[in-house]
Image (cartoon, rainbow, N blue to C red; front, side):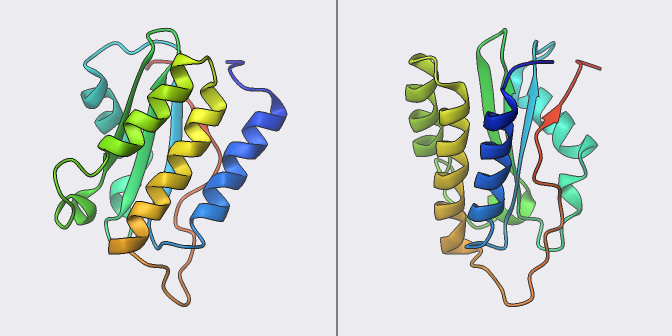
Length: 144
């Protein structure tokens, strides 16, 4: 699936790597062309498939994007949901959507990664000796 140029993929991965230097949270991006179920259900399914519910502090965050359907979701694991307010991801989603509406998919994702990390930092600051528990590359899915 060719959604991003090589440079854009590199920028997204680097944004994750850089952002995770400020939080113990783990951020991933998952992209597919079409979403065959409600977007939050789809994101939750990939969250589990990608092993994001296996982090030590249960502080994984998934940014899921369905490109052809123009849908996206941000979901956090149980450790995050236990401590943050219910509208925690609203500002991140709004900011990403403003980029998406202008046709700036990669910039929207990068902005979302950075803002998610800033917000996570409040509840899950970087811990000395923290290890990267999940890959920083984009997961391209084929709809299975």
